[in-house]
Image (cartoon, rainbow, N blue to C red; front, side):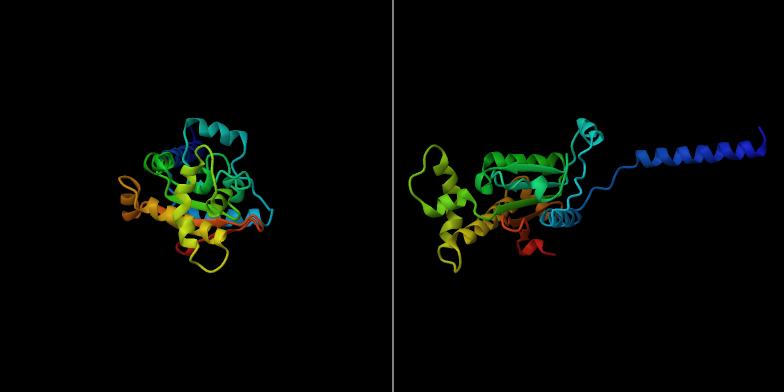
Amino acid sequence: MNSLSKFRVLILFGLLLGAASLAMAPQQAPTADSVLQELKAGNIHHANHRYTHPHETPSRQRELIAGQNPHAVILGCADSRVPPEIIFDQGLGDLFTVRVAGNVAGVNELASIEYAVEHLHTPLVVVMGHQKCGAVSAAVEGGEAVGHLPDLIKAIQPAVDKAKGMPGDVIENAVRNNVDIVVQLLRTSQPVLAPLVKQGKLRIVGAVYSLDTGKVTWLPDATQ
């Protein structure tokens, strides 16, 4: 083998070794702050109707067979007008979505969120209410509720009681209050969420979605 051939072999070996090293190196996990900025950018796409439609390819679908690594948990309302993947312009495997009328956090919702942050190491939880929420409106209007609805309304009632003493639209205020209450509930939830929040490994923020504009308004601690 001449000198030129040996040199080419060494170059090829170096390239292969470098590629193998990159493949073996663990990927750096995203921070809660970087994920929040990504969601904010995605919502701008939605509000302007200029979607990027990430992670919707067949290869992405096949990639997720091996497991999931969502970068945000969205605790949102079950309302059909408020799909998180579209609102934040996200794709397959990007969001761990927990949806329930009134975006309340009962035992099952808490367990689902705990699974995401404890086992999937998801760094950000977003509690998202929305304009003209039917569950909140029902709690404000009162009256007789059938089936299991009384239990749901009971969970929202503290937000409604607080809203009745506030200036402005009572339903809008109750929606925001409800988000605030759930955020605080999650931040202080033992034994999983509260310690992670205290250690700086988990961030929990609140937001309210506008049906009129498609924009998400972030509550004060999520505006930075």
